Image 1: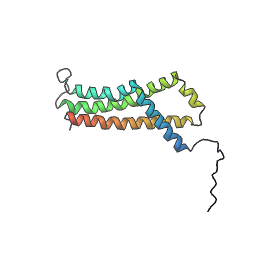
Image 2: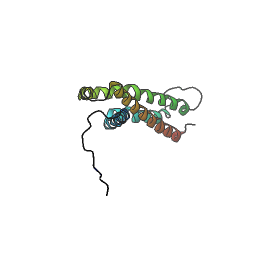
Image 3: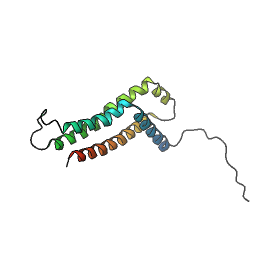
Length: 143
């Protein structure tokens, strides 16, 4: 038999940078999924605008062509802007109110790591938005 000893001595210190960024990104995504205002802004309102916009030919003159071919790219742009600007503002406001930002200041995660985690979460949300909105647009008749 071989002597297998476990090294149970603690090794204090921060986790590797990649692991910290991955954990921060997952935490940002979890926080976003729990916040109803952000979900409303990132998914529900753009889908409603896309579906209802195709039926608004009498309200707004979109010129020649099919309304869906004009509205879908506009809603995609609106969704990306709302996720990247307003969604981050809402999240930061909630984090400030609940004292999360103050607690993150005491963590080993550097400031740039916090920002990269937020940016990565927004990129994931925007990818989901684009997929959902493109599928809804194709279902409504976008080509």
